[in-house]
Length: 554
Image (tube, rainbow, N blue to C red; front, side):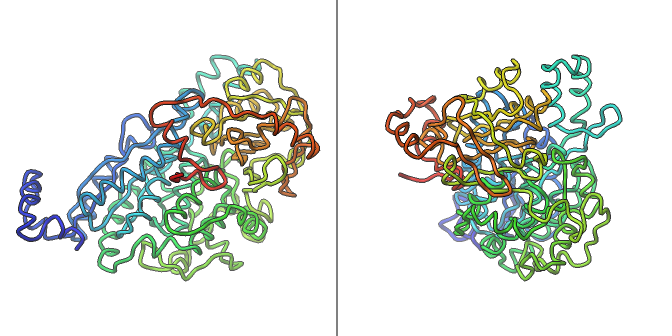
């Protein structure tokens, strides 16, 4: 066992004395040491219940013949961090989580791991760590929040942000906003729509790294506790069979995840995280392949913010496995791949029926014949940009309008709420990329303000930052190269015409090559906004959005 390095032999007598200080018995040290990575904290609603998940995992590991030992991972609530300097500290935690988990796992020589994540960067960060460490590992998330109910309708966090925009537009009273405030997020769990956290937890299932139900069983259901116990038991089976993350997270597994992503209509952040996870697994996942996958993958789900259904509805309809079973009817998945269950994808999804064709459209009656995510290219985004196509209204699939240019999110929000943005405009927010932010902030506040002001069907937003999974509309992010390195988005001027062609996968500024070259000659890099601390170090090492914003030594 790997843990023999800290438990066996005379040389390890000092190590055993420290295990003795922990209250561990010789019998426990004779068993595999299983690290349980707990992301529990008291600031993230999706993590406040993870102590119960962790206790259930510990029971499962012990029942399976292992010795469970808990250590922590951090997590940020993107909703609370939204719209201020805190959002600069969200994406950057993904790498901190991966690095710190690697340090803990290898320093203490764990034989196996159970990852207990839930919200946004915590899931990809731990998947990155799992690929690096490569000991038998299973994931069990904390589960999604139940939808809120306001005035007889199901609601989620995106409704809350849009209510603020509606109040600014004068179409909602302060009292109405307060009702949303009190009822939109009624339980613990990751926010109830197909936002980033739930997208990544569902894709963990699709990759084969989580048990069935990992992405969809609501946080408050007892079934979630049972799932956690089974995860603890299953990691011991993986240990006995020596099934490791890199056996599971192969190139074909990532293509499966992209296919499921297209069918579900996941957050655009998945286009940032999947390449980063793949990178750690030794797989080169070029995001341009997303359009190839999209071209042959129907969009089967319109979960919030794209439609009126929520994670609890997807769970009742059969969950991720039911979606995968629909996709398999047209042989769109690689089904012979091993998973954490010890079985193949095909074995896992066999017989998983679609119990609600209104929530999961049958494969022969999809919302659209193509997937929910589109990757765009053109002279404004030579290295790609990303849009959640399934959340764009039909009239904005193609659009041409004047650029309204802002060098930070705050200025754009002031303009939107101040009524200075009108129908037809294309809002451009730049210097918010991985380096320029630094930290690539989410733009949920401006997209929600646009929707709340009644401009969701007539105004587009383009940024080198990124979007929350709760964003909807013609919201085009991850524009690469970013402004901070002199990408074309840095050269756009107020009033330039911008053409968006989502069906054609194009994003262009209607300015001649000669004029863009002349502007490039005059362009000067901005002084970094942050020069100290972790963000400054991050800015020096981070790559562009189209590469997953992974860190590299220069």
